Image (cartoon, rainbow, N blue to C red; front, top):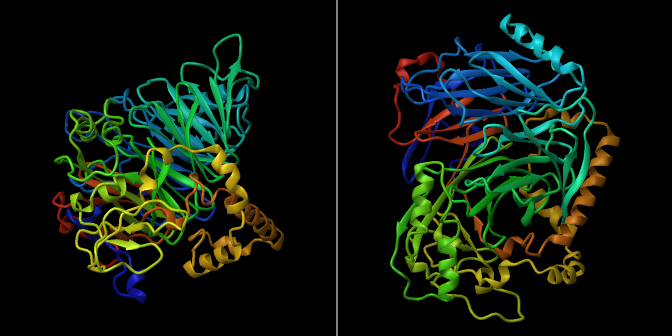
Length: 625
């Protein structure tokens, strides 16, 4: 972990950090924000979000960036590590009245140098399809009858005049705010929209939304979800309505092949669906609180989720179970993302000592190998997982940012992914510590046989290339945690275990949370001014949530902390003054954003394209570590 020094030093903003690949450096000249560069007053505003698209410009500078700050939406040429950002020349700028942009997404299939399709979701529930290059608004979705035509007609003129636009407030489909919007992979016309109501809608840009509220017919129903189709004599939007879990659906993400959909909900559940068949593939429960973000590994084999438990949770798609948790944040985790450029794959010789069957091992190696991949890194990983029966050594890199203003990088290594392999075969040096007791001085091999006694503690891994931890050896997870039989959720086991797990001591949980010194809603100073009635309601809701969590804690839905490996971050740095809301990995840099409205570019090792002296006026205060 990156806790170097103490006191004031730990609260200073970092402008570079080091991993095994080298030094990542903040490029102050590549910072994007509102043209006046004044920090945005973020109280009561929706999170700043960033979207990228490449328009295949022949000039070689085809990257475009879109970001929202408060009521404003900006569209710029993104120059990355090559040239300084010119904030005085946005391609398009829009200011909305009565509502705020909450999320947006480009369609990469239709993007050209002359036109792009950008979906924008709003806090009042609307969805706009705009073309920021042509400065046009094509369509509005989820609007009241009669208002769409007026708004569309006048929005275009008002934007050209640089004046404020005002989408109407009344909606026919869903009156709650939009939390996430995504184009369906491989489609030029279909897109999904999630709302804070917990509903998810499938739209077609070529269809209208009708002049009356939609009527739905049940199509499919399962545990914690239902899918309805829209009853209509002619094709209209929405095509489908998914009701997922309880509370807001905070984020969803498509698998790399577009066949599966992962949903992170405020009720704390991760639900993974087969998208075309609307079938529930698997479920996971957070340690406590809601899940706020979710992402897939480049090969589609693992899902990482983060949320209000301050943890990042790694879930195996093939086994449908939690395989690790990561603890490094001091507040809610707002974004998780895999780094496809740093994920590594190596061929290995078959292990001389393997505790499982050949079928089990090759099943893990081959899973998801035949899917088509969108980029070369993903294709390479998929190819190496499917071409022959030789084992592969994989290290996944993913990152997370949170309301504690910290950036964490994590390595998911072979000792976690394949715990049944001899540790001498792991390609990444990993320090392993006991979850409940000090590490042993000697190396232990595979764990002993199962018994009725309390299982031995499982390892924590921090995957540091030059660990400063104890020089003693390591322990491997118990064999029952990696066996094929335990990867299937046994409903009978869960049902009979509810009474046992419900005896969890809430007093101990409360004490642990106090000791961790959580910083809930780090930058929302208005929380302390809420009325006592509101606070009592929150306390009652918290008690109910604790009771519900006690029923699943200790099951395969939500293992206890000592039952699975606990990862520690490779890097953990404070990089902003306000809560972080964006983390995107690009080929030559990574991009972060905070609620003040500053979008920062961090050059990868060896990828610095500009000297700081070329733009000395934009250097922020901060320290270098």
